[in-house]
Length: 249
Image (tube, rainbow, N blue to C red):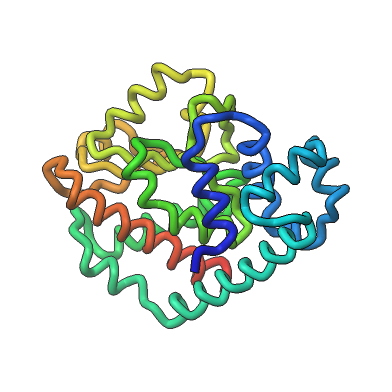
């Protein structure tokens, strides 16, 4: 089922414009669980939007009134939550870990995933960085974390965000060069201040980047995108499964 949140994320993750449509999408992501009790007037006031902007946005999604939009968002939220429960209750994350291609013990990987989930639980905002295709694999993780009440966005260079120690930055880069280059070229974002999670095939970053505020998941391989993409999917599934069982049940 293509829930309303998925359609909103399709626009938010793919748009090239930092306009009021983008800002409304972002507002919804950051207030996802609050919208159930948010009137149209509150939405406009808190988001600093004009009524015609809101209705321009919801009309693109096929709605004529804010109330219809809000009610559908609530109904689809419950649908997604039920899907998550059905899919994840009783599933053992250790089975996924056991079948992973990794360069550590099952216990070490389980602890790494648990530590990452702890960072996400305490985060005020989660931002994923990287090339378009690898970060698009994280869409299910993004959808579930928003459903759990955690704002989760993809980074866009035109959005002037500034990170701090309460943010989590997930960087997906096979070579790992993205993180190095980003720190040098976009000092205004202050990614170094955020809690960082680096998923990479470059083992050197387990030595150079691994710190108290940076968890590195090293994925063995030869920078072949196909294998790396499957590993990203497994890691994202592990995180959302472990998070659900550790913090949401």
